[in-house]
Amino acid sequence: MSQPSSYSPAHAFVSDAATISNFPGQQLDFEFSALKTTTDQICTNLALIQRDDGALLNGVVTYDSLSASVQSNGLAPANAWATGTLCTVGTAVLQNYNLYRCAVAHTAGTFATDLAAGKWTFVIALPVAAMPMPAPTVLGGVFSHTATTHQFVTAINTDGTVTTAQPAFTDISGTLAAAQLPAPTTSTLGGVKAATVVAHSFVSSIGTDGAPGMTQPVAADVSFTQTGTGATAITEDTIWRKIYTPEMFGAVSSPLGTAAGSLTNNQTAINAAITALGAIGGGTLLFGPGAYSVGNGISVASSNVFLKGAGMHATTLVLVPTVPTSAVQFGNAGIIGNNGISDMTVGSSDTTTTKNGITLIDTTQFTMRNVIVDRYPQGNGILAATSGAVGLSVQGRELGLVENCQFYANLPIQISQNPHAVGTASIVGLNVLSSDPLPAGTATIPPTATYSAISGAWTAYTPTLVSLAGGAIGTGNTLTGQYRQDGKTISIRVNITIGASGMGSATQAGFSLPVTAASGGAILVGKSTTTGAIHSGDIPTGGLTNALISSSTGGAAANSNVYVFSGVYEAA
Image (cartoon, rainbow, N blue to C red):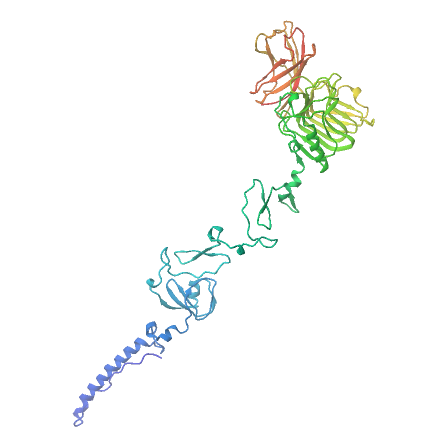
């Protein structure tokens, strides 16, 4: 329905006054003119409140135009708009200081999107002063917030959002009555007493009197899961119970070089550790740096038990014998297998009692790596005894590997029959160095036993005899040498024949090395094949290129004396 047309007079009645007597034409024209003025005003005002379709013009009816009953009709109490809220028709919300009424039931998503989709009807813009934004001292408009279990409101932010948090014990104050602190039971925590922290312990229980029980964890309390298909949890106990130390059973080590008579006798403690490993199916007895006295020797009687030190020159097992014995013995009560010893020195300071460094009896699949058998302390000559001393005694049935080992004994390696007259041992030597050829004498090897030496080729070199201090070295000296290098390990053998002029007693002589030594130093073992005197070739710390010749007896080197040196050192 369009707006009504304006009225315009179609006839001038004043023209009829000339033909009609006493006709009020002019008065009629005045009346119709006034009528037009009034109807024009009506049309104009009607256009202010009515649209062309006949409906009320937008914005004509204001909130103030409504009666009080109409103003509140259909509006629910207004809340701050929040996403995720279920909105029904008539729900009133506040958004950016504007009041809106829900026109279509929906779940609130993004307000601008919902408003554009006609789900909200704008009602009125509220004065800013009527609802200020929150500030530290002004509450203002606050957003609604879904309650979270066990949390309380900690802050109202300046944008009207609410922050909550779970209270801590420091947020609680006051005094609890006895009835409010029940005694703990198996299903009720109750009141718990304070407990002093105990180092390396954790709370394992809370007694019914409220007192916590403290326990130090053991290896079985710790576990981890390996990665990979089919991995399962493994406890630390499963791993560490296979590794023991002598100290766990009461052993005490001493610094290397401590006199043998001053060492603590650890024979009982070490044997107890070996027995404990055998009881769990085997494992490793791990020795730290230092000297460990083994008294009259230690014995391994179970399979799968290994003895491991901290290094060839770091750990020493010292035999202090009072009867003929071995420092370390594997087997003797039935066949055992998969055993070994590595990374240490085995020695004895005694030179009279008959003894062995290491003895194998009916031990198969045996490995010996990085082991020295020598006098204690090292450098005092070979492992010796009045009736002879054996570095490694192998007694039947053995299948073994001896790798990177040094034997300085009356008899370096002896292969013989076991107590049952079985002599089928087979020993493979890899990079083995000794004070005499290996094996020493075929008479000690049963026909069914074998010893195979596997190593790199020896390289000949000509050492030079030099005076390091104290005087001249004489003339006519003859030196020959051989060495073998495996990585940074240098094995060396040197023969020295003193010339016709001899050598002064004050002379400190040395011979050159084929490869410069590392800074850690080393000791080469030697003896005079002429006099039988024991000597050493000292390689001092600092990475020198010469070995200083020292004598156990002192005195001058006479004409034609022959000296033999051998040993292993680390290349720089």
